[in-house]
Figure 1 (cartoon, rainbow, N blue to C red):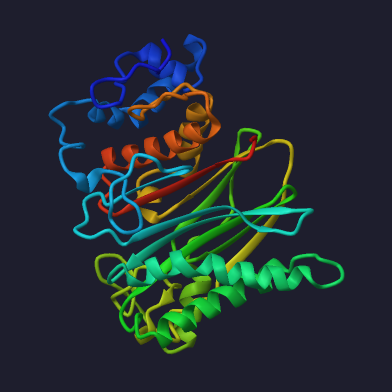
Figure 2 (figure 1 turned 60 degrees about the vertical axis):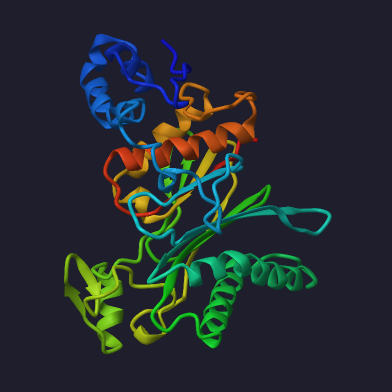
Length: 347
């Protein structure tokens, strides 16, 4: 049984062990244990097909753009307000945002605001432009190579200065995870607890490391700068922030910094896709499960979007995968805004 039938809400239900076994990639009775584990992981999707489940009863659960407007056309990504009162996430996709005639670069960014949406929305509007300016300057140099660590750090620092100078960020901030993808490289910069993950030849590769206050090196840095990490409904900087790095949050400087960690990976033929998402996803879904779900979506084995006509279209499948992940995170109890970008590297 292929998972390609839609109910009235554009979702499917997981109604049999056979279906779950196929989704989990199990082919024999020897895989029953794995199938049962996968079935338990996917069981929350069954809630999404329940007409009385309430998932689609409120627009707070619908896809939102960066201004809070609903939209059914979201290439590559899905972003939902979830169970929060305010939408503080913002998402940016800029295909071909820099082009030097020999190379083209695509930009993907997820921004998770806290204390309000002003900083995350400002990052969404400005950070890729700041990075593009610096990349174009770099291209004018003789060798034309990219020093991604310097470019990313300078762009994030400039973004932090702008929101602080504009008075946006006294007690408001945003995490940021961005990826620049070209034909030969994947450069990822992360500041905060959003995350980027790569699937390569069926294996899951983290492209970023969450900046949590209780991460050993982050805890040492905070304490050296005179700050403290306090257990107040979880480990928090000064008992307030659950992330140890962000753009903005001026009142917590120098404990909270905007310096990103940067990773650069050469593209390989075995690369499948990248997932970038806010912690609303990662709080309830593991890297491996997220990659497993996306792989099935890109294979056309999970279809969960409504009013879709071009189900074989690559852009549709990426968007569908992002929607499935946001819905699965909601069904598994995520209490945060949830934003997901899926980039198919096989395209």
